[in-house]
Image (cartoon, rainbow, N blue to C red; front, side):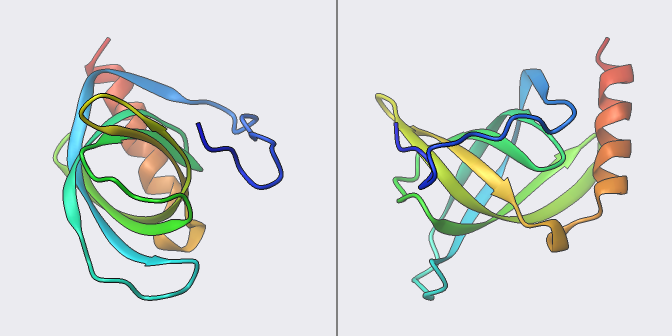
Length: 123
């Protein structure tokens, strides 16, 4: 597993919602450390999510520090979030990634509202 440069995981985000049925979506590359790269798109499964980040599985083989665009739906509400891959764990046919979300790419209020509705509907 690759760890953040400072070696510290910040899990004091308030809450992290784990999904019994993983949310599916798409992930596209946007660049690595500010350098534009050829776009690459693949499917993702969201394992868990907070207002600051998420854990996803994808068949894409990407390096840490890749900037990505994540597209998915929560209860028919579309989300388009930008983020950065901050760790990677290789699996047999895929990779698991930790994604730190870019705060300016989404409304925390909208995401929180959708996650709360998801919890109520999926009790």
